[in-house]
Amino acid sequence: MITTHVLDTSRGGPAVGIAVTLERRGDNAWTAVGRGTTDASGRVTTLTPSGSLAQGTYRLTFDTRAYHQENGIADPFFADVRVTFTVADAAAHYHVPLLLSPFGYSTYRGT
Image (cartoon, rainbow, N blue to C red; front, side, top):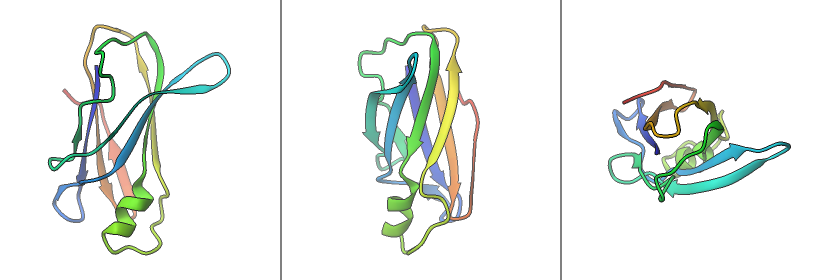
């Protein structure tokens, strides 16, 4: 299972309403395997609804432009945030949080 959590560090709380896409890299292209929107706690737990994963390379894309514009930043610096990572154990839970501000972000493997 792959989940995410977005915290807006400039506002000191969850980033609500961010569209998130999960893709898996194939031989020559990326294929969308899940989508969701951050809820009231900034979380998306529906990216892998079947709960099953395959080993491989995955990418989360966060639509940060729309989020920032909806929160009063007319021309945000980052249009989106893409986080690419490897799933080595298909039975494991991969939680990939995003700490976000208008001019920077960081991420890590969570639990």
